[in-house]
Length: 474
Image (cartoon, rainbow, N blue to C red):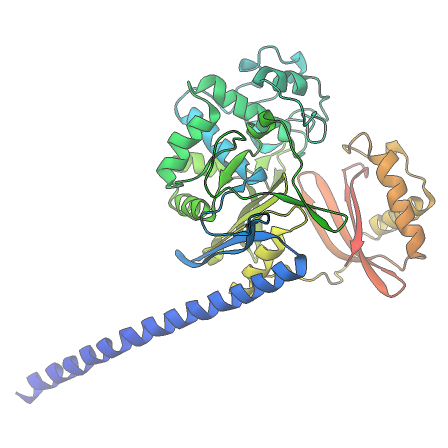
C-alpha cells in the first residue's frame, strides 16, 4: 500500500506545482514583454525628438507576438491629428514587394514566365531589349536606366507614354551583367500586370493580395477620393516644415511604389509573409532568393526584397521614400523579429529606428562598429590612397569610373574635392571592412582628418574601375 500511495502523493504535489508554476511563468513572460515594450517606446520617443520626425507608426513583432504597435506625433500638422495604427502612409519603394507579388500571381496563373523577354509584353520596345527578361526587371539587373529625377513630375503620363519614355533611356549595361536599382523596371512590371491580368495592377493587389492577407485598408494612391486616416507628407526646407511637393496623379499609379498602407496593414502582411500566404512556397522561394548575375555571382536582392544577413542569420528588408514619406520593413529571421517603421517626414530615417529597436531586442543584431582588420591587399590600399589624393586635386577622369551616372564625374568630383580641401591632410587608410557584392569588391577604410575619423568607401570592378565612392564622418 505504501508503494502505491507514494506515487499518488508525488503526483498530487507535482500537479500542484504545475498549477502554481504556470501562472508565474506567464506573469514573468508578460513582465518581460512589458519591459521590452517600454524600452522600445522610450527609444522611439527619444529618437523622434532627436531627429525631429513629424509623425511615425512603429510595429514590432517578436516570435509571433505583437510587442508594440503605436503611433507617435502627428499625421496632419494643420489639423493636429495624431498618428494611430490606422493612419495611412505612402509606401514608397516598400511597395515593390507587392508589385513583385502581383507579378508572381500572373506567373502562377500561367500568363507570364520569368524567362520571357520583356519584348513579348512591350513589342514596340527597342530591339536592344530582347535579352531583357521579366526576371531581370524584378531583380534590378535589366540595365535599364532609372527614371527617377528624369520625368516631368507635373505632367500626366498615360501607360503608353510611361513605356515610351523608358524606351528612350539608354541601357547602362547588358542584361544580367550587373545590379543597379531601377524604378523603371518596376514601372514596367506594373504595366505588364495591367496588360495580362484582365484587371488593373491595383485591382490585382486589392482582390488577390490585400484581401487574402487581411490588409483591410491598403490601397492605391488617389488624389481625388476621400480616404479616411490619410496622413500628410512633409518636407524640411531650410529648417522649416513644408507640405510635400505636388506631383501629377499619374505618377502615383505606377508599380515602383504608389500605395497607401497603415501599420495594421503591414502587421497583417508580416503574418502573411511568415505563413507564406497569397503565393505558393515555390514562388516565395523565388521572391526571397538572391539574384544571380551572368557570372554566377549572387547579388543580395530578390524580387522586391533585399536578402541580407545579420549576426549570421537571414535579414529580409526594404525601404521606401516618396513625397515626404519614409518607410522601412525588416524581418530578422533568426530572431523571429519583424519591425515596421512608417514616417511622414522626408528627412526622417526609418532605418535608424529599425536598427535601434533590433539592438534592444537582441544586442547581437546591432550593426557591428567599424574596427581595423588585417589588410591583405596593400596594393589596393595604395591604389585607393592615390585615388583619394586625385580627388583632392580635382583630377577625376571618366575612364577611372564604370557604371556610374553620366553626371557623376562632373558633379560629384568637385563636391568631394571641396570637402577634402576643407578637411586638410589625410592620415593613412586603415582597412575596416571588405565585402563582395556581385562581381564588385567594396572596401571601407577609416581615415583620420585632424581629430575627426571619416569613412572612405570605394567599390571596384575586376579591372579596378570605380563603381562607388563615398566619404562621410564615422
